[in-house]
Every structure is written in C-alpha cells, then in structure tokens.
Image (cartoon, rainbow, N blue to C red; front, side):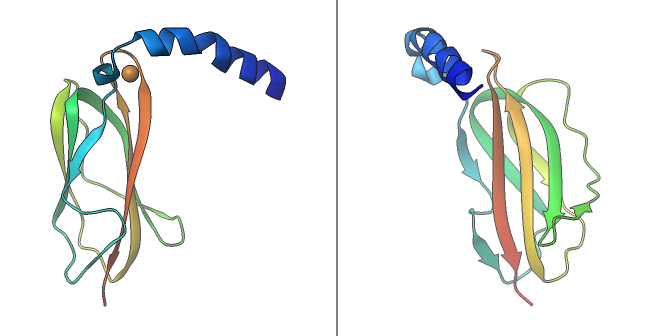
Length: 118
Ligand SMILES: [Cu+2]
C-alpha cells in the first residue's frame, strides 16, 4: 500500500511541477497568530488567502478536542478573506481549523491554535 502511494505521488509530480506555484492558495494572514496567547477572548477570526478560494469545514475545538458550535456558514462563492464570528470563549486553548478548495481543485487544510489567558 505504501509502495502504491509512493508510485502515485511520483506519477503526479510532473503535473504538480508544471503547474504555476501561484496556483496554490496559501494563507496570507490570520487575525490570530498561530500559537498566540490572547489576553482577551477574540470576537472573531479572519483568515486571508493569497487568492480567492472556497472555504469549508470550519471547526472550533477546545483543548479536549470537543467541538464548539460556530454561528457561521461559509459563503458559496469564492473569496480571498473570511471573517468567522466566535462565541464567547472561556479561558483555555482552542483550535480553529478549515479546508480550502482553490480554483485549481487543490484541497488544503489549515488551522490556527490559540490560548485565551485566564
Ligand atoms: Cu494548487
């Protein structure tokens, strides 16, 4: 199985190399820096990408991995920036994660971890 996976990766490399690097959508900026400790609970989270992208699977989890409900539905249109309102967060560690699908079809996971100081 591992051998097959490697063969698939090797087979897809020439295609990946031929695609312009800019076609890949990268995170340009997040309103909360990864691993930041915040003195106050943030009211929202904004993520900005290098190009318009579709956003999906936005999840907020606490330190125990429990999902915290978000009052947010990603738009059905592509955008370069998304602002996700956050619920009132108690002190603790959180992870906000998402998936993007770029116009070239590449799906990329992303996440930012942060701590609200108590
Ligand atoms: Cu890509």
